[in-house]
Length: 297
Image (tube, rainbow, N blue to C red; front, side, top):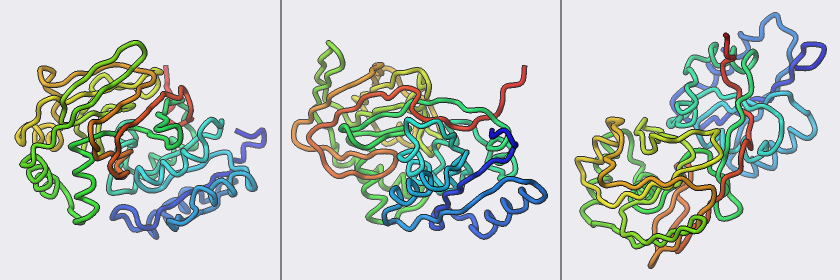
């Protein structure tokens, strides 16, 4: 915090995310700052050149905090600008999927989030660098779930019913793939329904895909799902059940190369990337500073 106690905060708001009224969000934040000396500004995302625009704001206005007001996509925009920097990131969950907020254990109430942003402490977290360019904050995957993400985007499916409908459609095609995975000196070949690159533990639905995940431990996990059924998908992705270890391998890694026979569907943090023949991923340790509740001993 600056010596004069005055904090400059840039709020990055996605007006299209989630179902929350953005006017109500702005009003609640304005009310929170009544009678205090801090400065704050708003940037509303447009979908065009947002990373460049946020970077310009950070360089010229030099905020002490940057707050993502939206879902995982909004947080990722902010993270792309602040990766490797010491500027703390705050989160106000206001998206349709708030996977990282859930992963971090953040509250949904705006006042509680603001208290953490203003009075909490920085937790440094790892990120994944995908194909030497894009970052991944929580989960990327090849195969089954990535194909579902594609169907969701194309058909505008909503909620758990849409997920179940899509899961049945994909499973009927039995979309297994052959992958070769290189991690350090280890080389393995598998037939799998899905391969997950997991920095975190769970998807935005609350499904625990990686029970050993830790955002700050300097490694990520490769989850290889060799067998899959509709019932297991429903239990796992909609009911929040842990994985069946008899049908799944979990391997820790710091970097990997994956080659696919043919092509596989691929998604990063809930955004479909197209079909790929291979993927690389490497951990970038302690790359971001996220505001968390202060530990009181």
